[in-house]
Length: 372
Ligand SMILES: *Cc1c(COP(=O)(O)O)cnc(C)c1O
Image (cartoon, rainbow, N blue to C red; front, top):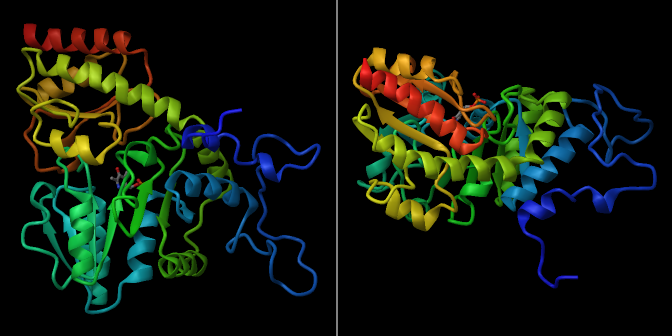
């Protein structure tokens, strides 16, 4: 037997082992229940499906192991982000959001937080620390940002906001706990859309909040129980199943992205490309120090909106779809979603297809554009 502790990827697959009795199922059971047998005093066991569920427990045990912090599951990434905001903010608070992060987070602040007297400012991820964080209760970082893949120094942001007396939240959706460890870098709270790579099969929306701050987790849990923003047991079960293969899928996706990004960049149809793994990319140096992988998202610019559409729709191993992190490679022309990017801007999410097959399909589609 080896004396060294197993890696997170290895240990993750055997988390249920110690709790098993003879005859128990090796996979996590799915418990579809709104009510549980609850005679007598009502503490210390499952009673009602809005409070707790044994399938959530199994999924949260995995999320918590991956984050090395207590974690709570939510029915979507936005539900997790909303929980962190509504549990922690009060009238008069000021928060800072990225201009180039997931747009729905800004809409949430604009349409709902503002009405409760929570003010928000925005800054580009690439210059997020400029100006300092004085006066902010919460600073929200998304790194790499979506879809431009700019990066912000998470450890420096944590130090600066702690000096100012506030908390740092990191949306770690694009990287997953296998690609970046925001809590280890000093962040107070991680939020993520497990809809993406953690579930990985494009069939569930899910999210989680993780933090080593017990007060934060107590408030977030109370928010979940009270607001009813709970995952269905079946969705939690599917996420649990997805998490079992996250390491294998994420590794394949990141390795393929590293192989394919420089080849796309060198293609004559491509005007500009961003991938943190490329030497010379504005994100590369910081990415090399704070990320464990460079991710599986690649952004690049083709000559026009039509070229972007033709490239995506003409590639036989590519789904034309929003979102990312599924087993299938997918891509989207981002002006469709209102991002402030050039008309031919494509966000490509590398999937699990064998890399050389995928590259051959991408190259064929780019060649057709260059020849048109
Ligand atoms: C998708 C996404 C979200 C929202 O997740 P949903 O599950 O769609 O609610 C939040 N942040 C980032 C970075 C995302 O990519």
